[in-house]
Length: 120
Image (cartoon, rainbow, N blue to C red; front, top):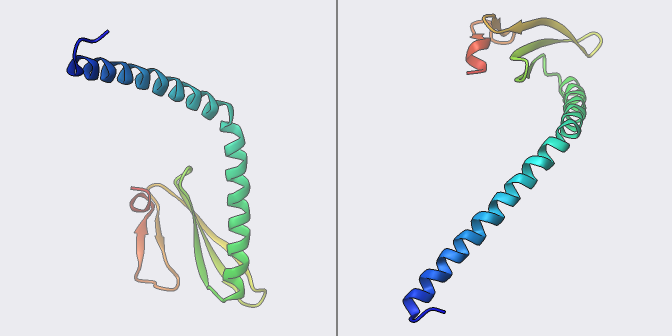
């Protein structure tokens, strides 16, 4: 037992810190295990969300006459450039660009940008 209030507080503080450290480590271990266990699920969900997002945006952009759009794929460090075919109101892939390539914009021809700059 502690003889005075200062000893008691110091002892209690040490106990609380040890308790916190132990439980924090347990939480980190559980979080790592959960992350590893569900990694594939997240990849599948992210891919499904990306496909839905691409499809939705494709339709919205076409409906609104967006003449050009670029689709960036950060994990692959690539850009796909699409141009709207006004006669069909559908996008055509104009180019596929990777690191060390330069993309020019058909809407703003003076704009040229390196794929490397996009993914810096």
